[in-house]
Length: 156
Image 1 (cartoon, rainbow, N blue to C red):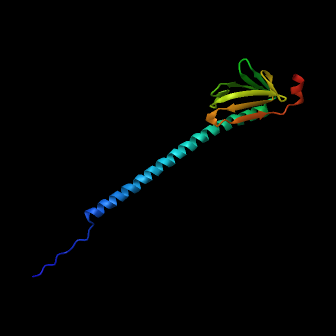
Image 2 (image 1 turned 90 degrees about the vertical axis):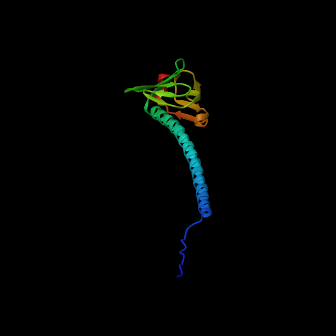
Image 3 (image 1 turned 60 degrees about the horizontal axis):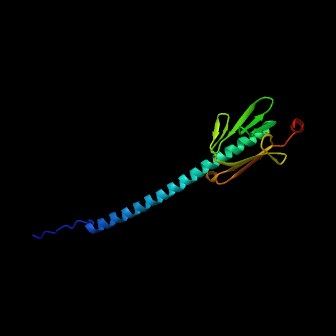
């Protein structure tokens, strides 16, 4: 009697090792690319947060400059008062933040200038403000102004 031996189809040990090595290389590259993408996303998020704070500061300054009829800067206490017949609000300036009421806006203020009729003011009525931010916000400049009414000139 002749017995036929059945050959089992299978992978050899060397083929399995090669497949595992190739899989490890592909997975390693995928994790490396994932880390690069995550770093890029974190950088974009930080930049977005910085620009958001800067835009928020600019927006509330524009809103208050257009809403309030009287804007007075007290140079000795470094406070900007915005007043009208109905309400009043104040801005407190610090090097690393700007406070308006209960809002704290985190921006690095390197330099600030107040103006009235195009002339720089150290105290008194103002109609424009210029803030220069630090490197954290990309050395940006915020310039906000309002149009003066006849009442503004009569007070001065």
